[in-house]
Structures are given as C-alpha cells and as structure tokens.
Image 1 (cartoon, rainbow, N blue to C red):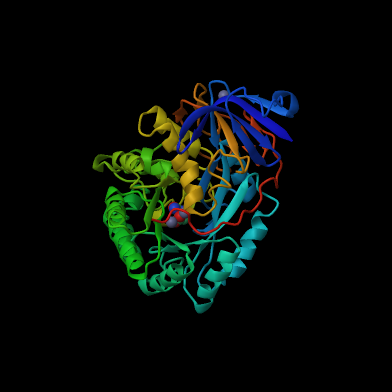
Image 2 (cartoon, rainbow, N blue to C red):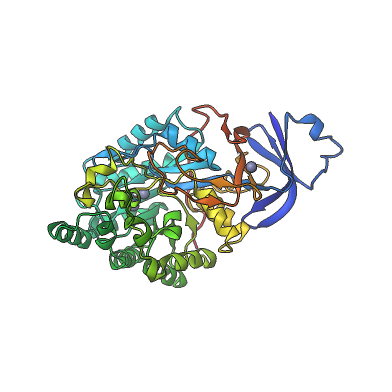
Length: 477
Ligand code: URP
Ligand code: ZN
Ligand code: ZN
Ligand code: ZN
C-alpha cells in the first residue's frame, strides 16, 4: 500500500515547507518537492491512494503521553476502555498514546504491567506505549524498574498526594529516584502536598462545604508549588531527571523554570484544561440539571486554577518560552451519572479526572489561531517533544523518511464544534468542552500507513494499534 499526500504544507517542529509525502507500507518513504518525481518515476500513477492536501497542513500524528484508559480509580473505572478511548483519540488526530500501568501498594509492578498489556492487546485503534506508576517502593519495585526498561517502559510516575492510594513518602521517592539516576529512567511526579490537601478537605467537609467548587479551594496553588519544589530538590539530590505532570499553577511553572535555568533535567507538562478552564467558570458552575454539582464535570487534580490569578495566561507564555515543554490531556473520563455523582454530597468522593483525548490537537490548534503559539510550536508541543521526552522520536513525532507513517491532514479552513452529539466520541455522558468552537478540522488520519479516519468517518479496525517499546528519554540536557 502506497499513499501520496500532495501539495500540503508539511509542518514539523523545526519549520514548515510545501512538500509531497510518500508513505510506503507503514513508513514514510520520501518527503519531496511538490509535484516532483523520484528519478523520473511517476509517483501519482504508481501509488494506491493520492490525498490532495492543497491548502492544508500535513503534520506528524498527535502523541498524547498522559492517558488513563479504563483506570481503576476513585472506587470506579475511567469510562473509556482502550478500545473507545483510542478510537476517540484517532478521531481527534492523535495516533499514539502513552498510558499508565497502575501499581497499588503491595502489587508487583511487572505483574501489573503484564495485566495492562493484556487489557490493551487487540483493542487499540492507534499505537500505544506505557509508563509505570509506582506507589509503595518495595525492593522488588527497584528490580522491576530495570526489567520494565527492557520492556520499553522507561518512565515511572509517583504521587505526592492520594494517601493510602498512590502516595509515596519522600524516602520512597528518593529510593526510586536513586534507581532512576542509575538506570536512566525518567521520573514523573504528581506534585501536590497530599497531607495539606487531606487536612483542608476534612475541614471543608466538616464545615459543610461539600460542593465541587471546594475541590479547587482545598488544593491550593501553594500545595502544588511546595510539592513541585520538593520534587525538584529530591531529583537534584539524586541526579534523576524529573518530569512534572499536569502542571496548573503559575508558581509551579516558575519552580520548573528556575530549576531548568540552573541546568537541572526538569521538565513540565500541562493540559488543555489548565489553559482554557478555571475555578470560577467551571468548578463553580451550576446548571438546571445538577445545581452547583455541575462543577463535578471538571473535578481533576491538579485542580483548575482561579481566573483572577493569571495562571492560564502564564501557562500559554510558558509554552512559548519552553518553561513548559509539552501538552498532554491526562485523559481520565468519568460519567456524571453513576460515577461523578458518587460525590453528590461530598466533593472528595467525586472521581478525579477530565476526558479530552479527542480534542487536544484541536484545542491546541486554536492556540495557533488565537496567536498564543506558532504552527511549528503546535506540532512540537503535541507530537515532537512527547516523542523525544519519552524515547521514541524518529520513529514518531516527525515527518521524515524512515518515520512511521503516522500523519494527519489538518484543514485550517475547516471548523470543529465540540460537544456531546457533535465531535464527541469518548465514552462519557457529557463533554468538559461542550460548546467549544475550533477554527480548524482534522480531515484525514493515517496510522502506520493506513487511513483510519477520513471525512469524519472512522474506517480503521479494532486492533490496528500496536504496542511500541520506548528507549530512554532523548530530551535530557
Ligand atoms: O484528576 C486526575 N488527574 N486524574 C487522573 C490521575 C492523575 O493524577 O493523573
Ligand atoms: Zn496525577
Ligand atoms: Zn494522570
Ligand atoms: Zn475538513
């Protein structure tokens, strides 16, 4: 199967240029001057499919390096399975995810990794890799870190919050970081001070402040800044590289910026929700159907920040200056009915998470339209850096000969209306992005040479997506 994508503007992280892209089998074979032949060979007459990308962008498929398909969490499971979640991702121009294997205290990480492989196998629409969550750090966890690197799991997430569920104490974190410093693993951190949050939550509930808005008030930016600083210092102590996930507070951004200016291998990720949504507009929302429980739709951690404090503006700026290096979704969807509503009378019982895997490419493209980021930066934040950060750049994250044929044709003159009953294909009974309008459109999605989405139709097959092993991070200073 040979496909020629002609007359498009190819957008890589390093720049843009008019070019034709030839995909042969699963791989990009050539990037050519528009209309050119290969040594006189008539390309158009000799390929199976010609896609006319005139007036459109040809970009490397999106890479969402932070998803939680069917994650057991908060007394339930994230509502997207590997099947439904990866299909929704494909619809939105994302051709790879890196999901999290969960290890609860007492579990053996390698056994959990095998269980996650079994869950995903044969179900995914797009390619996938795994990070490993570490909760308690047993001796066998340290051995597992070496074994998992051989399996292509080269990054490990730890939590400074969620006591009794995921939380690791500082000693456990240092132990795992020491291992990471020696075997090259990238250590990922959920940086929020869990003890402080647990106290504030208990006080709020005791005072009768039970609505979702209080989720934001009880996870203040100080708890994020403090934990981010602590994680950076523990990484500094051990020499491990550190990647801070779902950064939302501007003060946490500044901690990361200072560490980077000091030459430390510290990186930060943010998510669309921290760029567009807020404590007041979303966690504080009310509706006829749900009253002030409407805000449960946006309960996630770290929480949405106050509009008045300027976090969102600061975050866009950090994306321009590379104080924050990439954008993932932290896709962790739950339905309002039967899941989020477990917290109707107590916000701390609302399962934490937002679903966005389908909309990240569009929401970030809107950042280009709105003048926040450049076209190349859009690709860098959503595809190229995720691949470099997590050790699979060259194979993915770039349009160049030899890379996987993961390509999206994006139409800047198209339009996308987001919401339930519109572009929404995630397994959720609401959309956290209801009513968002995007000045662009995902036209064609190609995964390893196969067209899986075309003209608003999913035409792939369950199981098209394959596991990819990752190497060590290619982003270290
Ligand atoms: O609210 C969130 N972020 N849920 C997913 C789990 C995590 O902490 O990433
Ligand atoms: Zn987290
Ligand atoms: Zn997460
Ligand atoms: Zn279109």
